[in-house]
Image 1 (tube, rainbow, N blue to C red):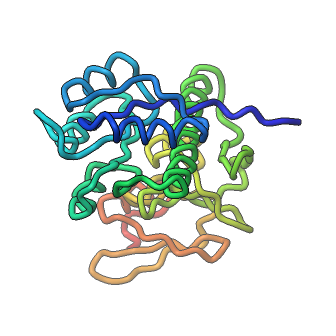
Image 2 (tube, rainbow, N blue to C red):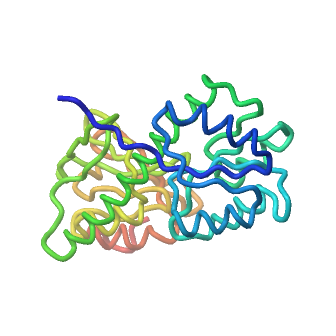
Image 3 (cartoon, rainbow, N blue to C red):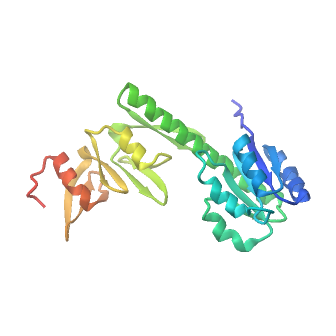
Length: 259
């Protein structure tokens, strides 16, 4: 079966017409549809609000507001585009990534370099779409019945993990992972989304970065100075936040005098 890849909708913002033309020439063969062009930051802001592109290829030095200022402003949109800086100024790279930019390409933009960026954009768009689907599933399930499986994307497929197989969910490096007995799955949920999604009688938030299945808790480890960890039946050890320990005790039916 042939997989149909939807074109990426993009805008280009650069005050140099030749630079815009070159980038368009490089992007279009890669399956990127250029839906608008701007020669300054204010035009780019208007285009973004009107056309809602998937990706904005953005120069830094432009008349009026700079590309960096524009990228920061776009972060406040409900559905901001993916930002890719394409500029002749390599020294701004660190600051650019603080605006959550996907990539930073130094002019002249070589076709091979742009192709790698476009592939990264496709992956991020797939992640964004998965989060939207997940959010909709959570909303629908909350109206209908208890969720029995968690959908996690692996490449271009979706794996369904049974709730009863989940030992814990943990956050690290801006990602959330769920663990079964055998393996770890990277998800595109937030921990708060999972906390709402997972059955309240079966799971508990024990830390800002962790949710555990009560059925999988084998041991509570006292570390001293009112610090604790739980050991799960798959041998994972999860920290317990001080403010959350009392709730864990209550949910496990422990006497409050213990620990």
